[in-house]
Image (cartoon, rainbow, N blue to C red; front, side, top):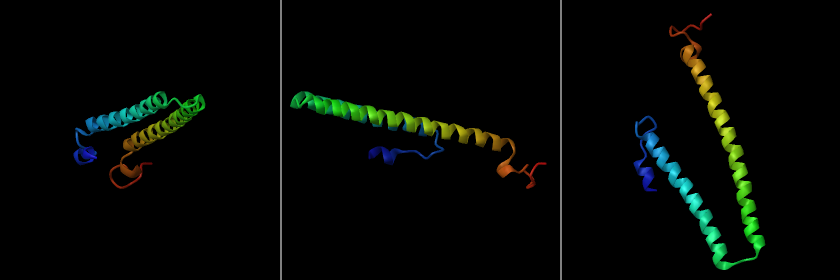
Length: 102
């Protein structure tokens, strides 16, 4: 929660470092929680089916993450290519004088 108070504006030069920090802490929390569940399995020693079910759920969630990340990057790259094409033609498709190029 403290990181929200320290988050710089989107155009600030330190925003990239905050993003790296934010993603690193998030991924570390996910990894530690997965390790914690496996430690709990070792301590409680439940039937093997529970551990296998948890592994299956992790694999399914991992597959969903891969699909969604792939889709997200496709969308991002398409938007970047469209915005670079628009920047060559001026703002909103005009030539800078309010008229569309012919």
